[in-house]
Image (cartoon, rainbow over all chains, first blue to last red):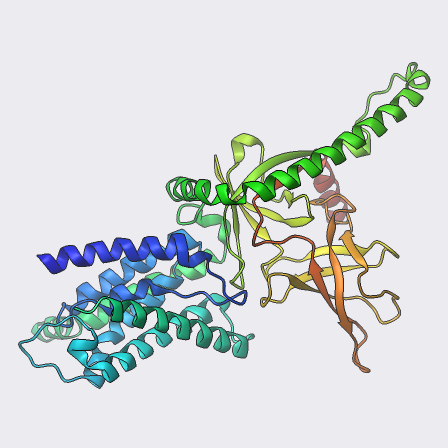
Length: 165
Length: 281
């Protein structure tokens, strides 16, 4: 029950932070961090996968509605919500009975950083390519993806290291 | 049958995943026709009033700059009134006997002032939301300007809000010309920096120099002639190219944009109709 409430609160806080603060941060003119995906990243490991997908779709659609990009964030969020369990399996070995929330402590520092990196990069790359809707600006988009990913990852790791549980 | 059910259960997550992605993707594709999706965008009343609230806080920090620009504009307008009064006084006696009524060309335009309540500058396709809509007289395809220059074109209108496609959107092209020699070409954003855009189709023989200013050409019926667009920042031309590549520094700072004016061109319908009839025959 406690985790459910915690997750609802983090859902609301992350959406508000994204929409009111981070969407206005435009470092170098086009670098825009998207930290709302921390919600998907931090869901409990053994949460049913269908629920993860639905939650990813919900938060993506909400962010879309606020930033006039209907469908783009929803697409990328669902993508990483689906890829999540494979990425977790790839980098960690968690026993069957356990159901930890991903963190430095439960995954180990190295595995957690790798996990966050892959999730964020996958999300940003799919988002920016969808936004352009063509391969015409390929290198520009790859550059944008890289810069934004680095900043998002730094913010997420920073938040996580302050908030050790 | 049992096999089918087993199959569905086994792959239920994958099927859900594909289903959700399909929904998202069809939303994106549909959304290319931006006008249709007023509901899921920031001209949706609920979302827009939320932005309006947050904007009222941000607005407070911009008050000083806004005030300055307003008072500057005020003085400019007052000066103009005095000049016009003088001219009118000189002209009036002669016009007493003229009976015919017509709108002189310089009164065809009316300005509707509006406030920016949401905008972005960091995407390939940026949009701006205004706090006025249909009930204030804003219609689709009207031009939008600020005190500094051209902002964009109205794309969607709901009852209380309007969404504008600004110059910072690679879908829009604004025709502009040199103030010096009247050569014109389309201006398009490059997608990188919110301060610069490219001017295309300026032929090799045209003479211009750095710092020359560009204004709207008046060839489209959205903007009247002579609204500032920007200044030439940089240009180059390859031996083999017939056209210059010109980088233009935009007159409007889209990051600090907060008050704009929507242009209501009274003869828009008539001109549009006439042009359509002409091309049909």
